[in-house]
Amino acid sequence: MARRHRIAVIPGDGIGKETVPEGLRVLDAAARRFGFELDLAHYDWSCETYAQTGRMMPEDGLDRLRESDSIFLGAVGWPGVPDHVSLWGLLIPIRRVFDQYVNLRPCRLLPGARTPLADRTPAEIDFYVVRENTEGEYSSSGGRMFAGTEREFVTQDAVFTRVGVDRVLKYAFDLAMTRPRKKLTSATKSNGITFTMPYWDERFAEMAKRYPEVKTDQFHIDILCAHFVQHPDWFDVVVGSNLFGDILSDLGPAVAGSIGIAPSANINPEKKHPSMFEPVHGSAPDIAGKWICNPIGQIWSGAMMLEHLGEKDAADAILKAIEDLLAEGGPRTRDMGGNAGTVDVGKALAEAVARG
Ligand code: ATP
Ligand code: MG
Image 1 (spheres, protein in one colour):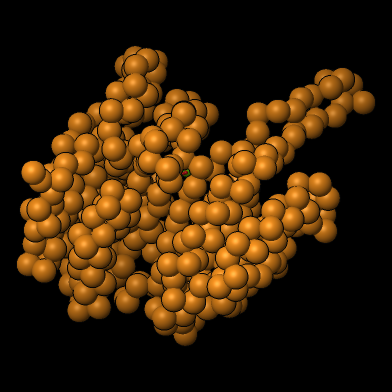
Image 2: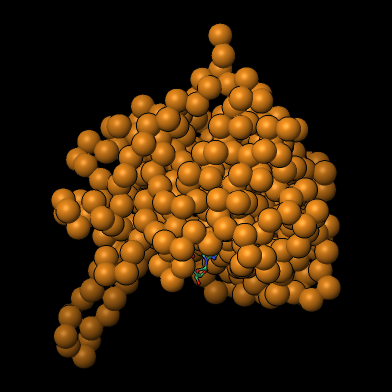
């Protein structure tokens, strides 16, 4: 019997409606060639749904998603709908309820992509950022005291649990073990943040003992950001807390070139719950509706999804198609200096995957 994967598809807003169909086109080509089936459930949840119903997704939305093996998302957010509505009405509940505690972003300079760093070659920018995605600095714990008076003060707690820290560190070490360089860098700030960050460092050192083959180092987040720009070739896998990982996971793809090609994954490594795959970019209202956006970030996110589902050969084939298209001067969208449309790029990649 053919392998079957149940995918919940949420195009969302803006260019998500343009990139997701191209992502599905390429996934379909991969499924045919590698002999598995994709069972798609489409959900039109978006800021439009919010305008009509007052909710980003129906009340039983999470229960419906729970039935799937993975979630394939476009982009969520639109001008006029505040972030706390679009994010907290859809993305954040999915990440939290499904315990997607790893946010993973490959940062790779692909041939033909325009990195803002001069003289860097693809071999020199090829690393992963692993962000803790559920706790740390982004807790909802804290408060405001003496509001409106001169004594007014505000606190926000950062919460680092042993379970939460260890599981993301373990994921990062395991990922480093799969890489030729086997190197892991930790983001810290233990000179300024004197409880949580020393604890993070302590757990990192403890976990390192279990992985003697992995070379480790650590930097304070400020100088680490500088090194991303000046020495991207130093990095292989980089792990950070929710806040530091958030910063690095935008900086990393930025140094690697076009925002239009960067993929990301929100992963529940134990596969108890569905994981979610989405491009790094947002809904891009400035170019939405013109069908000129780059679908590669979405398509690469689809490759990450297939790898997570155990379809490694299919994932590799998609990545190879992307690399070949860019190296060989295939159709490319405006953000990469071409004039092809979204659909042209999607079709070219689907054909390349089908051909092998
Ligand atoms: P969000 O806050 O939802 O992450 P944003 O508003 O900060 O999103 P984007 O929506 O990603 O940012 O857009 C930032 C810029 O990048 C815009 O000028 C947009 O047109 C451009 N852009 C984003 N994605 C793509 C894409 N796939 N192809 C081409 N250009 C893109
Ligand atoms: Mg925005």
